Amino acid sequence: MTKTEKYVPLDFHALDEGEMQRRADAFFDVMRTRRTVRDFSDRVVPRSIIETCVATAGRAPSGANQQPWTFVCISSPEIKKQIRLAAEEEERAFYGGRAGEEWLDALSHLGTNANKPFLEHAPWLIAIFGQRWGKQPDGSRKKHYYVPESVNIATGFLIAALHQAGLATLTHTPAPMNFLGEICERPENEKPYILLVVGYPEDGAKVPNITKKPLGKITSWL
Ligand code: IYR
Image 1 (cartoon, rainbow, N blue to C red):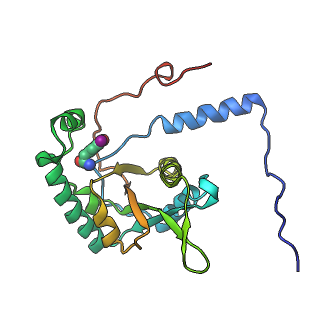
Image 2 (cartoon, rainbow, N blue to C red):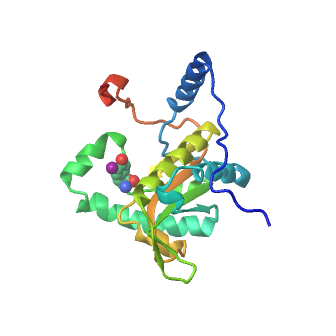
Image 3 (spheres, rainbow, N blue to C red):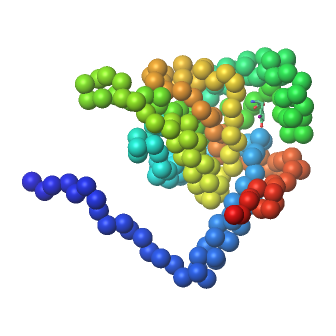
């Protein structure tokens, strides 16, 4: 029997600085065009592309390498419809008063409202769950560490992978989101974090005329 080694050699290939800069610039040029999209076409996206992008998300670092995430990938029209109905009910309460004036004011430039047709039109919804705890071999609870950080880093990987693959996304967070666990039939240890809408933008889709902060506004160098 071969013994599993505790440590293995790192697969790392250093690049020269010119190549590093070229790659950093090339990736920035890809990511700078990412925009949150709210008008989705119903054009089909092959499952294999979603699979590969979720596999990329699964390479994210996580607390104690516990990988405390589940990506529920939904293309079923019936389930998308259930999600739309439940999300719109929450959003009606949100826009109808629960959000409060300050929050609605902060959102007003995005032009959002309680109607979420994209939850049915887009070919894929990816409901991202964090596993608040895991299971020991004997079935008892196993504590998980840094679950929100881990899930959110993996979600960032996923959004980048989908964008790089030529797909549009919307990071949707209806609140509260408990209906997602019920519709997706997730176990009680899983908490919904984000509902990612994935597909192609509708022809002629428009996005809010907003900008990102320049580097000088998001950094401090010591
Ligand atoms: N979840 C609502 C409201 C909303 C909240 C924030 I913060 C946004 O950046 C965008 C929307 C909705 O999806 O309409």
